[in-house]
Image (cartoon, rainbow, N blue to C red):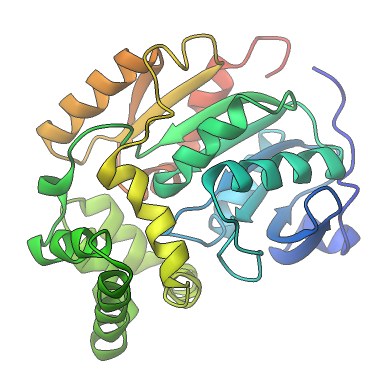
Length: 307
């Protein structure tokens, strides 16, 4: 493993050693902006979270400290269309923006953790960037029917309405915003994550992070909303058989999910050629709820001279 180098796009210096600061990088290659958080000293190996529509926020501060003690500097990227990151017209354009960030920041031997709706973009990034040493795809849908997995049932119906038309996307997104305003973001997240005690526990114990996640995800445009959920609900033709068999990667899920989810997850992972693992607590938020376990999984799978 090459020695870590400082992020050339960093604007805050040593402040990031102890605090989670969000910055905005202007990418020369794409002419777009990308919002990201960096925590830790410059000599730590980059551990980059590509956030999803479910949780476009930074990992908890305690996890960032634990990761730093294990030799990782934590980044969290709000992908195009979230926060102040410039929207992208396609998933491939999102991947190009992320690759440009890695290149212009000068980051290398990176570990990427993508979650939920970020996975289709991460797969595309994996096949074009040589700066990433290992990928973790978490809470993956890949190509399978997951409509029956959503709890409560009305939430799944809202999501399916999104794909019917632009007007349907506006109505669906508006209904979600109204539910959050009327009952509060904590209620909304606990309701949608109800099948996992670990996810609910994370929501309750991290009110600041969940409020931030709601603040960002609830104001995305209908175009970004459709781009986020369409690959999971309609399928992604990019995911051909054996696509990931030569990639240094792991697909993870939380154990607190349904048997039907696990069966579909394992079947799709086998088709794509990627190893699977389960985290002991959580489902949608498993990589955050089971943070130390995630770090241990990554360390075990990195080559011994890189850990």
